[in-house]
Length: 256
Image (cartoon, rainbow, N blue to C red; front, side, top):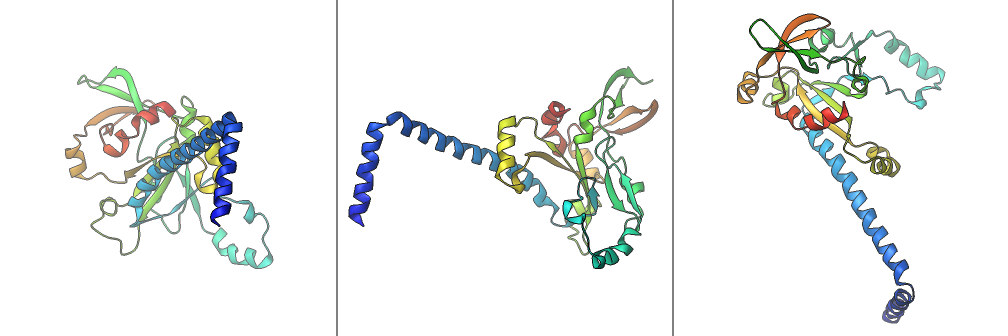
């Protein structure tokens, strides 16, 4: 065994001396590959860290891209079993206005549209002021910002017997917002897609509670701002200082 190892080492040494450039290139390629794998793992680790906060919740929606090719062919038994499910009424709603819509079973969650539709709105300064001199913000839509349609949302509600001490349970659930990380180089994105299904496109992800607590509002000094939607006025909390959003705001602006 020792002789084989020794012979291999002598062969490698001789090969390196004979072709130093080839071995240098191989070493650099290996190191670059390790760095790429680490970069992809770190990017997806951020999203995993965010999603660990959802342990007391369950997702109740399905987005418009969840249909798989496996459902194209069904035998007679499968069709019979799913017949009752197809009778359920499914509604579409947008937890964040103008972003990608989701589907929710109305029979199981009849209050979903009333409580969870258009909970949040993206807006920018309209350079106009109200009667009191406060700046009026104008809502964004897909017509002026097509990238909004690429922002995905998920609706999560508390599980039965969920931990009442969980802030997201106290908030009545949350919206998970995600979009492709605009800071990721396209070549790294493609490499991530080739590695496996779980490492397709690095995402920027944040959690927005369905109801903000008074503590959240006071602690982060959130203020009400006037805004306009389709010419109609209203008021809403400015969440630019809310940690979940402020942490990703630079990338969100870059994405839009």
